[in-house]
Length: 538
Image (cartoon, rainbow, N blue to C red; front, top):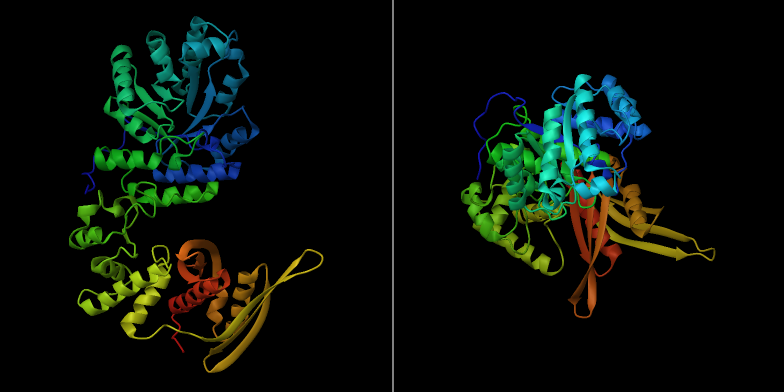
């Protein structure tokens, strides 16, 4: 298990963390950022402490042009410098007359990243110019922007493929950019086809042959973008280009968060301001919310499953020492360890999960044994407690206290779906309950039978328990478990509920979706009332 390295010297220009979420990351399928979205993400990235934030291509589209205009006045950058992205001058055009180059200056970004061709076939087929003119385009544009007071980085597009075809020309592009004044020349694995050993060999050779300061930009088409980035660092690169959560075209880019965590925790290299690494998980999830993509539960370092343990063998070891099955302390990246309860659970898993929920079970072997057996029995019937912590806590409390946590008693319920001649449907539910000695009957309609049942339950209970008014169902999942009953099947329902302060999940299992949903709702309401401090009545 890796502990935090000793604090290093203050951040300097010796190593760059360069984020391109707002430009390259925005090319991911399903992401469509507004200017307001881009401003919000830029604030998050600056708060995280990256050194450079590439905001987009001013002049290429109105959205990016507006972003740079607004960022100048709406964001007070504390850690990052804003970077404008663009291309070298067009072939046959004076750099002073190129409107795209002028737009880069008009953005007023202190740093400019230029993309240039370093693959001779791309020069001839895509740019339709000569290799010599391409070198002149690089030289002229870098020198011109430097003369205008801009810091310049050059992205060598398709560098690794170009190097494989014609290493001399690829290196000449790097050398030309360096001699014209580019601070960093970035080697781009644009097609994402490289492997770590290949990247390291090329970076090491180019560094020795050109003397340029090198960076790395890796796509993830082989699943090696993070490994390729770190391999380039091992070979001497001092500038890494990444995107938040690995967003990017096709399968994505090198993921900012594992790269930064590895650099700080594995290499002992200070690349963020002090204390910012602990913000990793929060920043990752905040950006996922802005782009409206569910955070990956299994993402390294920041996923909710990154430090989740299920097997009883693991739990037994973790009970002795968490270091035995965790490569770092999760708190270093703002995450936490979780114990999953399943039919694989042993006594140690139950004890650790109980401790996580506030129960000390270490001295009650009989209670732990009952809970283990009950979990295994219920999971055999189709329940799952890995994603239903609230239902597990209710089960644990029932075994520990000798009674179920009940706020109401069900007399009956029913849900009706009516097909009408005009093709519309009506969904109606009726519930009959007892709560605080009072019989409650309520009927409600909904968008579906489960929604109607939920509304009827609320209508019946909210007068008795006004705390329920603050609860909201935020997610609802149904899974058919085939083959559990011979040729038949049963249904599992997972419900996520929020009270505005937190969120919890409950599970129900039955032979039909309505009955399973009722169980999950019953647990959800009981848990919500318990969180609100209401004493059980039934």
